[in-house]
Amino acid sequence: MKRLLTTLTAAVLLLPAISFAERILIVGDSITGHSMNLPYGYTHQVRKALKDAGAGEVEFIPLGGSGQSISSWRNVVRNSREKNQKLDIPGIFVKEEFDKGADTLIIFLGMNDALAPYTDHSELNRWKDEYRKLISDLKARLNFKRLILASPTMLTETPYSYKNKLMDEMAKVIRELAKENGAEYLDTRETFQKYHEAMRKQNPKQTFMLDYVHPNETGHHSLTFSFLKAVGCKNIAERYLQNTMPATMKVSQKPGMSLYVQNSRVPGEFTIRGSLSGGDFKALKAQLPEGLKLKGIDGSEQEFTLTIAGELQHLKNTVTITAGTVKQTLALNAPFLISTGYNNERWFKPEDFQKEKAETGIDRDAKAGKEVTKTIVNGKKTEWLVYYPSADVTGGDDPNAVDFASVTNGRPFESGYLLRYIHSPETKQVNLTVGSKTFAGEEQVTVYLNGKEVYSDVVTKKKGKRDSVPVELKKGWNTLIARVCRVTWQWAASVGFHNADGSDVSGLTYSITHK
Image (cartoon, rainbow, N blue to C red):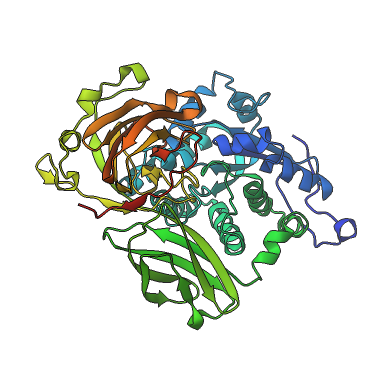
């Protein structure tokens, strides 16, 4: 193993002396795989920053595997004693790297434990114990001097989604495990959230992820900053931040506002959560679309809540919030009623799905033209959430998309329902469009329109994960109901109406309270 100087002279960088490990291994998932396989990945950036600082011989080795969780990495460690397994990165083999040992070992996992339904709030103690076992496995498998436990980044672009709230708790567990094992805690998540929020205050369309899971180039900049700090190169990290992320450095000092729409249990009332930097909080006011009125404002500039009454009538809407000189807009889409927690038979391939076994009383009442919000399933009245489609979750800016996994953990083979009432001023021939923007998982969608089944198929097997069939909207109110069955991993689908050319249908009014 190469021996490197543990200091760089101030004459080289005009920076104070720094220390760092010689050989660093990162045990990770596809995000760590991307760190090498994407040109802007954090491994490339860390290596370049070290080289530019005169520490180019530091070995920084990513062991990233798609789909890897805390539990599955235990199998990787076990197999590495005999099998020279390759994960996501060509030319890097686990056994070979483990056999060489490391000065610093970084565990950067947790995303897949949250993304797939392996873990929820009730199972954090079990997850903590499994993480503890992985640490023991790694200690027994390879020699290393220093252990760092890194928290996972973000899942969806809103800090208020179910998965991000879960991951906040997972980060606390990781911090506890670091203390328990005499390891260091790497605040990758907290740093990611900090710069995500800073950028969001300037531009509500700014994203830190490619697909609501994997960091994009900006997200990898944040990770680079974190990993440089972790390996003892705080001064190089600060220099990197100033040279490579100037926009991020500046926005944290600028006035700005972030806004996030919140789902509701009360039809006709919802909230928007926000945070303000600069501006005048006492002058906070909202310009709302037709049909809405502001009931009240609570909190402070650090975190405030706007309570809004009324119902959106149009598919796409915009709210504008001002606080003195600070102004920000938020897209508001017509809501759905959604209901989750229904199990169907196990299936993995499209041909294995059995539609009849997936049906519940909601399907039967939908086909009978009955009010499904009053349906009794397994002896209980169904519960419905008012869900506002948002560009911050899987489905993107599609106003007809529902990301069920953003509001619940979602068990394997679970089904969920969505409901909207649509008023048409006249009989219209339109296309029912069904789609999915997920990258991992299977979704089967069955759609009922005015008491008739008009679509049923595994949409994720379709080209582009998108399908369309002609339907008729009657004059007056139409009832749209859909069941979305999933296998595991992501759970989201889009169900709505379009013209033949793919454009939105004009003249429609939307409601979740029409009877």
